[in-house]
Length: 197
Image (cartoon, rainbow, N blue to C red):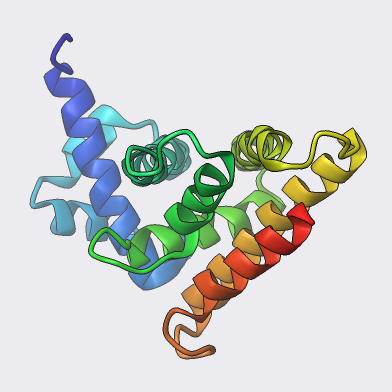
């Protein structure tokens, strides 16, 4: 496997700092100066790698997705081929706590969703990410459901779980004390298993 270029690595490091700042201050508060300070680099270096804040946000979406995929793949390696366990691994990767839980990424994702309301370019990539999540869930539900489960039921179940994950992210970002610790994953697992019946 080829090593990433220094430029790609630097862009990813800047995006990581941007995610941290955005999680703490929201998109509006994530100034280039604050990101540069967090990254420990001159502000001009950010402008060398990105055309502006929107470009940085767009790049950060990819980083957020990659981190979530890594979390999911880690769980998949422990599940074997059982389709129900694979479906629950998807749920766990999104809402379970643990050593690899990343509150800043969840909060940054909520900021991306909020920015998607007003900014068409962000909306496009946000919707694409949501559809990828829903499509993965559709495949998982299709594999785990009873053989005669209708396509419409599989689609509804995938959409419901994808939407619930987004809701959990929103609540966790705004008020992490809203529910008891671990409540989200337990509830999401019950909901997911209930949709298989």
